[in-house]
Length: 180
Image 1 (cartoon, rainbow, N blue to C red):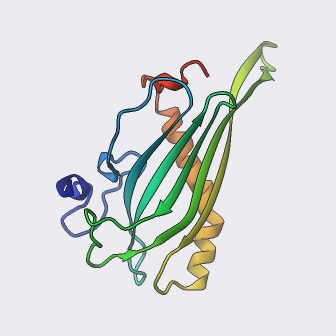
Image 2 (cartoon, one colour; image 1 turned 120 degrees about the vertical axis):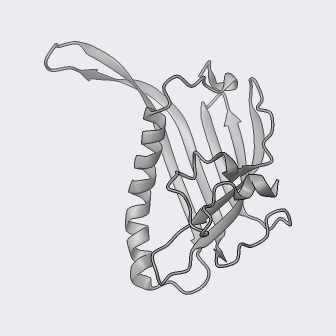
C-alpha cells in the first residue's frame, strides 16, 4: 500500500496541485459500498498540506467514519486522527492532529425559484451542509497565520466542494442514495 500512498507526491516532496478530495491515493482501506438502507462505512485518509515558508508543511492521517441515515436523508462523516504503522511520518512534515472534524449533509425540501424573465417557477434541490473542525496543527505557527486560515478556510473549502459537485455530471450516484 505504500506506493499507493506516495503516488500523490512530487519528487521534491511537494504536493501536486490536485484537490485532496479527488486524489485516489488519499484514501486507504477502500471497502465495497453498501447498496441500500442505513449503514456505516470506515476508511483512512492521508493528506499533505504545503504551507508557505517558513512554516513547515503538515500531514494528517485520519480515520473517516461515514453514517448514512435514509429516514432523515442525512450523511454524516466524522474524522479523527490516528496512527497506523502502514503510514509512517514523512520526513520534513509535521503530523497535525484532527481532534474532531465532522461534515453533515442533509437533504432539504426543494425550494421554488421564479425566473423573472420568463415568469416560470422551477424547483431547486437543497442540501444543508454543516462543518465542525477542531485541529491541532502541532509545532509553532504564528497567530496571524492561524487567524488568516480560520477566517478563510470555511469559505474556500465550501467553494471547492461546490466545484466538485458542479463538475460531477455523468457520475452515477451512490446506489444506496438513489431513492433519496
